[in-house]
Length: 173
Image 1 (cartoon, rainbow, N blue to C red):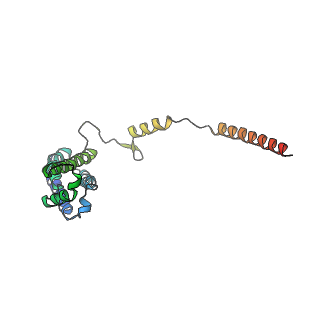
Image 2: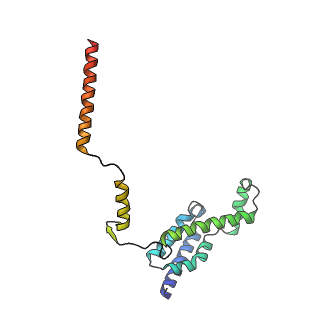
């Protein structure tokens, strides 16, 4: 965990937070929260910032996405009829918890806990040996088709259809 990692991470987070502040309300809506965090964590990951550095910054990163008090009050007022007796502080706490959960999900998608998974060397195009093995195992679970057997079955079906057609022609006469 170097000082340059911390500085780089801080600059990336500051840039993201300033861009987030200029986004419209629809770009900060609950449907876009995960996408906003995905962008940030991908940028940090791509820049080579380590797990520990980003993990230490999570609280501040999450807080940057919290709604302003005026926006929260306006939203609460407009949705008050749907709140089922929920007070404003409860509404705001739920909103912040939802943002936190989405942030954590995005974070751990790119930064797995040490020892949980490690990036494997890609040996088969874009797949690691483990991914390739899983794909092969899944593929081999399906029955193998024998083209010659299929041709025989098709010919047998065609013969049956021809016999049925011949019987129909005899009945018509």
